[in-house]
Image 1 (tube, rainbow, N blue to C red):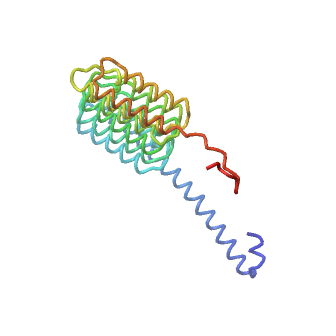
Image 2: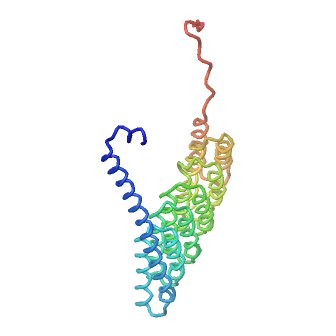
Image 3: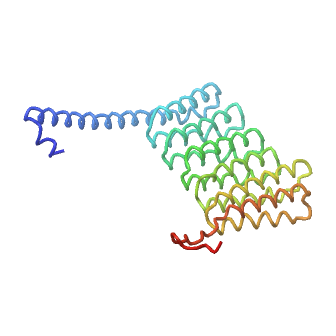
Length: 291
């Protein structure tokens, strides 16, 4: 920059310095205004703390939607985190009319930022609906986790999501277990995270062992597909070998249908074919090949 300034006439140099100074002032002022705005939003959120758990439905719903709006209007991680903390109240409600929209509000807030801590806070806020007994809210929770983890492949977020999906994937209810299998696969795919791949394989043993009278084969085959895709994608030889061994083990399981056994063998073969073969040394130019 100084070299460039040396070629400019004196008046041009002065104008350029003034422009840079003005830009710095505006940037500083912008940051100050943003901090001031976030301070006001944090104060407003603090004032909504009692309203989001008010026994009057109209008061509670209005407060919840205001919390949601505030979180989306700010780029500040502190504002979003406090909003998510307040949303634990409606998302823990026993009424789907209140907790269902809160689940999707949490997902939207998490997806509005790249801050890992905000996403982790959002996943923690979803813990209660993921453990609920009712099918609709658990499916909504799985949908939200799926959305959050696919919006950013940060390692901590993936592992936290997998931990959260452990309960649903071990459920005896196929309506919960099937979307959980799908969410586990989407959580780890294209992550290049060997620890996540292995944690996912741990979780998939439960549906592979399913002996449900209705939907058992469908659940097992979904798990087979997930194990296959993880094994094919993984770069670590140990992870590939583990996925391949799982498929070979279940292909020999006496209680499995012939069609399911065949699909497991196909999965094992595809994983094996994805193993990179060592390249042969390049022959020197002009060297005879013996053909």
